Structures are given as C-alpha cells and as structure tokens.
Length: 168
Image (cartoon, rainbow, N blue to C red):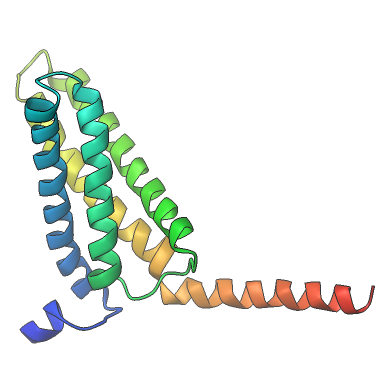
C-alpha cells in the first residue's frame, strides 16, 4: 500500500479509513481539550467547568464531523446534512457516555488501591470510545453495503406509496 492512498483520495477501505480517523480523532481531541482549557481558564475565569466541557465537546464533535466527512468517509446514507450531523453526534454522545461509565467503573474498582484509577480509566475509555465512534459511524452512517439494502427498501416503500396514490 502506498502512502498516497493512505492520505489522499476517496476510499471505502476500512484500514485506510481507520488510519485517517486516528488523525481526525486526535485533532478533534486537541480542539476539545484546548478549547476546554481556554474556556475554563481564560474566558470563564476558572469557573463553569461543565459549561466549558460541554462547549468544547461540541467544538470537537463539529471538527470531527467536518474532517471525517471530507477525508475519512465517502458518502453518507443520510442525505440531509443536519440529520447526518445529528446522527453523527448521537453516536458521539454514546461514546461520551461509555467514557463516563468506564471511568466510573475504574473508580469503583481501583480508587481504594491507587489514585491512578482516573488516568487508567481515561486511557481505557478513550480507546473504547474511539473504536465505537469509528465503527458505528462507518457502518451506521457511511457503509455502502447496508446503504444499498436501505436504498432498496426505501425504493420499495416509495414504489408502494406511488402505487397506492395512483390506485386510490
């Protein structure tokens, strides 16, 4: 596999998409964490941590969506961009909830043993959320295989509806 294929051009190859998604996810994380830091420490004067984290999560999510749709995934099954973004975001929120849950589990299991439970939980949950986000987005939003099945089903429904309209 040559380097040009890894970094440029459209592809449906899962390995190439995963390779690209590592960079997209990394950059989105920098946007998330960087904006969280700026919002909390500079804009909000060391107050409103939850607001800073919610806003920074949204900024990271938007960054991930824009770069993923331009560079990682070819074409969405969802033709409406707002609906596509909301679906993309819902998958991201599931990843966020996984992160919270996994971190909480490590707190329960390890808090009495080591103060490192937080970073162990963070690393583990980040990896789990990364793979969830990539594969859920790839197969639920951008996969051609199930897209063809969904298109055939949609065409059948539309055909049935037009048949009913003309025969009513």
